[in-house]
Image (tube, rainbow, N blue to C red; front, side, top):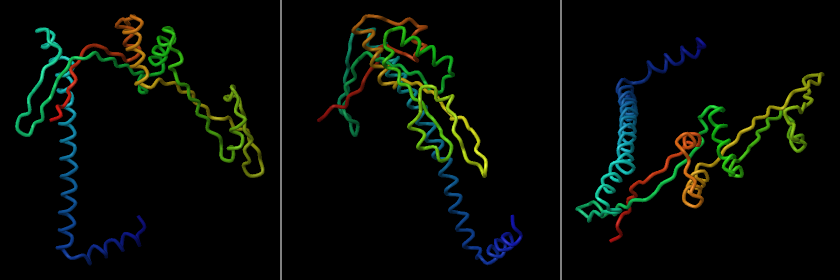
Length: 212
């Protein structure tokens, strides 16, 4: 830190009354305590959501199917609204962006093999050097081979265009396709194929608040 700046900060501190400094510290402590409180609450919410999902996807469906019912209700009680709980089929699938390239490619390959290649969205991101906006319109299929002349001082230097190829399937589209594959075409993926697309299917309980 610049000595002059450090001296100015030191001087300003010496000029601040103690009661003002204590008030500032007290407010800073409030901020620190709130940070910890929020972190604890978020952790509790995450834990409760996990427990709730277990009830909806595992516990309640198993208990209801054991006795042969597909719905059950709770009447309004005090400040709690009434709810109806119904069994329903669910389908989920997601080729996650955080997966490594090999795992994602296995998912895309399975979707393609099942005749649903049109679900795959392909995006090409091209980064041109400064001043290359006009050249973007001239991009061709072999963009990786494209060279751009960049003026640096008195010299012109050829620079490669940076190209990234990214493929994705929106998880909503993939989940809907999985449902159609099973319910309309009666093709049930095995466990290995389900894993390739981050898929899950089964029966869950869906809550619906009663309107009174």
